[in-house]
Image 1 (spheres, rainbow, N blue to C red):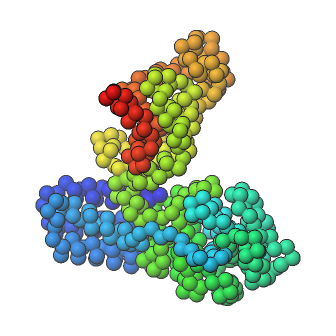
Image 2 (cartoon, rainbow, N blue to C red):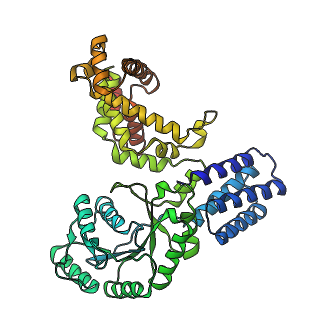
Length: 468
């Protein structure tokens, strides 16, 4: 996401960074380039105008911090103002002690409203220890309620069917009563949508909101529709009142105009973004981290959180020990590839790393990352075609075995040969460069030890033994 805007802004800021003395002409040129980049990214015209004026007034009127060059100062101002434009800080969903708390999900038909209801329910269960119940009050669209039931089963969240009830207001009342009786603390209400905003839909949403008094009313918008999503969000906010936005299909939106405009236009924050089709592909929206990515400064915090969530600590330590004993096998190599796949696409992972890490290196294009991912799949297929004994000891892989493995994995013998060479080289290199820690073991171990101290116990024990 934001690829096009990011490339343009990074170029402008790189030029600024190289200036030891910043003249008004430099600033005017930079602001002109930033204005064009934002407009091309489909950001609302008024939002762009206000943003550029704020940056210029601060860049001209503010005293330059001693530790920053004039160019760096402007970059800091751009960074701060973009964070402000996106909402400032991340917004958690706020719940009260009342049971159940209701959350209304509203939006136009086709925006991903029902899927987002399921994704958010799963996220709340996993990350905020909520116990949600789903209910659909879309009694108009054929199979809409059945769609939510299917999603509920997929995310393992119960759904209130309300058999025999076909009035939206009666449905939510019955669902609330069921929550009280069974003990659910959160009622997720998937409301009806329309292809276009109409008075009948708005009146229905107003009645449901008045009856349920939801703690959150979240508008679901398709990021790919750009400023149309912003206009729809404003209309819903003016007539129903929303507390936040869920932007879907952010992974497919290279421009990001809706995300960069919506908070400034309606005064309500983006709370979550959908970044894929899987039911766990929903992320809280952190303006500071997003801006850091856009400006090429990376998003290491999100990367750390992802590693902590997805990588098994025990397995990482086990792999670390194997590397220390020089016992890292092809089986372990396959396990590490599998753990890397859990973290998402290479493109998304690279976007979280600071741009200066790759200074002097060719830029990684989507085609290059796709090629690397294809190579990883091929590697996995080749290792899968080996017997457990062969994965345990690569030295027994003679010519006949290599031919069989190539045939079984749909590859050529030279592909098997190349994999084995890479494996031996990688094994040697990781021992030298990472002090005996594997790819994911090293990243996971270092990150976790840094943050929590977990995993450092064995090294402390070794130091104690040496003192004795």
